[in-house]
Length: 341
Image (tube, rainbow, N blue to C red):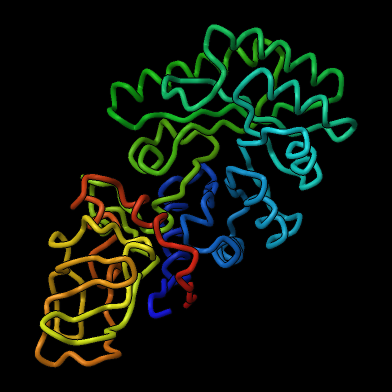
């Protein structure tokens, strides 16, 4: 295997410090879904915990279990996908916080909790429709949640939602819905102490969206939004570098990374890679290798950087094919070895 992903944990720590400083006094929830955006969840979580992060957004139970094994009992872990009774019971055993976005899940969590009093964050649908309790159902669900609290099955510790981050106007409307839902929850007798609405972009640009906590993934990994401000403007740096080596030299230079490693083949003729002799255009992307414009001093074994802090970023590549940087990062195959610095 010639391709590898170098993950700079020092840059991760710097990004975490930058984001935490920006959103303070709100607390950072580091989102580690999809194997920490394909950076490697165990190493990322261990370093983030050392840097003071005490909330992790794990999305699913399997990821949450890895976080719990890494940090022990000293961190809070938030999950919002638990479908089966077995998953819910596993989440309770792991002492997780549940993001509950529909009445059925609320009942399932309460029924499974027994004497453990599941920690619940009720989700209001503020318009993105990425699950969430509909506004017309919210008052009834809040009342039901209060009755389940009184019965000792759950504690409603939070209210949360996702927003589209499509425009300030749309996000302002979503925030109005969120604020109204919080008031209605309190009118029902609930006392949520943690309100969280914003992800990376809104938490950075809109202080009024931060509330008690912000769920930030992409920015902590140095992935800027497509079509948005630069990494320098955001005071973040890409954490990961996808690298490989020259494996053959002919009319073009063969580099040992291809589409099966996760690099979109449609980037051919649209991207340049960083070689020991400067930038070179990618001519073709095959399954396990790419063809790159040659350079006079090329040798087998030369290091080539596909993307990273000293080359094009994941978002730079994403913009070439009209997608987002997260997609480029998440495409990196598990067969590509991760090296931590």
